[in-house]
Amino acid sequence: MATYESKKYAFSGANLSGIGATNIADGSVDNTEYQFINSLSSNAQTQITGRLQTAGGTMTGSVVFPDSTGPAPARIQMGAGTDMKLYSNGTNGVITVLNGFYVTNNDASETMIYAVPDGSVQLYHNNVGRLMTEAGGCRVDGGLSVGTTSVGSTTGEIRAINEITAYYSSDERLKENITTIENALDKVNAIRGVKFDWKDDHIKNRGGEDGYFVRKHDVGIVAQDVEKVLPEVVAKREDGTLGVKYEKLIGLLVQAINELSAKVKK
Image 1 (cartoon, one colour):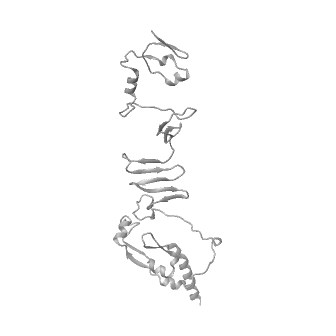
Image 2 (cartoon, helix red, strand yellow):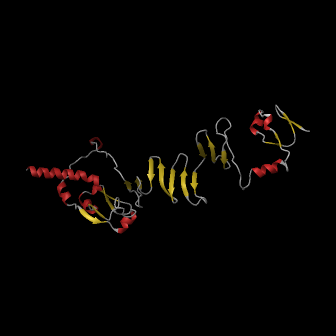
């Protein structure tokens, strides 16, 4: 019977299976790893191909790769070059990409995540980018909700079910050309405090009336009134409508009270 000489061991028989390839390569193979397989019914390549699908089909069982550490890391590589690799570093699963990285639906018709090395990471909803990282921070395309409530379709709207705490820059050292608001009381008198109903289209665009963030009946002021006397606190939005920076009215109200107080003291 023919005998095969390895670096250290000799074994007989023409039919072998269960050989530890790694151990054969480094010469540390153990004799117990060699098993006789007298039932080999065809050439070895045919039976290997039957186990390991090389062109479609279904593989049964698991393919296990060791942790990708040391001088010869075990990684799954996809693409002609190093486009994409999958591996475990011993603690976490790792995906490396050469260019961009997409997560899509089954037929790649809808993007869910897109990431670019040294660039943006984007999260999509229904194939529309909604959250993007940028060099200066993070941008939301649409509304932002903090808590359990949903946002409507109004771009730039922020909703929070609890308090939002913010401090605005107001240090005198940051300002110049400081002057007192003149005729503040007259300006306040020109602004009406009103009760009103929002139009149905506006309510619909904000996701519908919810009795909390969106109510049909509301109170406030009219931007056009404010624009006539204090245009600095009024801004035109992308849709052409006007918005008021309500917190900026505090300065006007404080000065109006000062004027009223001065009149009372006379």
